[in-house]
Length: 221
Image (tube, rainbow, N blue to C red; front, side, top):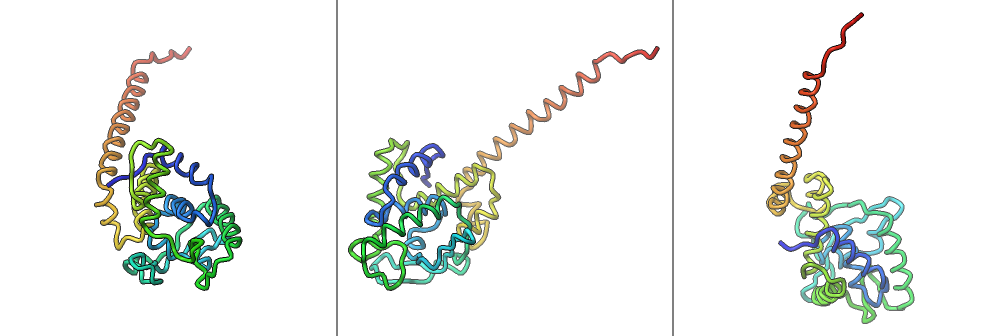
């Protein structure tokens, strides 16, 4: 499993934000992946009706058939249909992107969020090529595929202490055990770090008790 560290993640977002333009839809798709953890096919299947800035949510209820670019398809499973919360910055960027899309004057009867100047949804190959170039330009510590942005999102939330149960629902996993298995290595590392904190905390407590025991008691006059 490959994912970016927090520093590379931040630098990648900064880089992609420099070109919010519907002519380069894959860059905005990358930002959405980093902020939501959605699959490429789920992002490709988003319509503007799924974007709700007033409620601060994005509805993932379908996916796009990326193999032949033939249209919508069902999500991986029922749990994959979900409504996730997003940060205000993402909606602001999507609004900026939407404005640039209007200038393209491309027929978009389905109301797709991501449709290129050629009237087609960008392919996964195009998204991967964009990402490889972007990671090279920011001197990232590793090269990952577009799917790795999903792992990056989840790993960042784990790093920030977000509940694994909430992360599981956000990613659309059938159950949280799947999430635990996928990110077990990271969870074990965090568990080891927490154990170290526990030992330090108990040692500090023991030190405080020792000082209390050794301090001379005041004599009452």
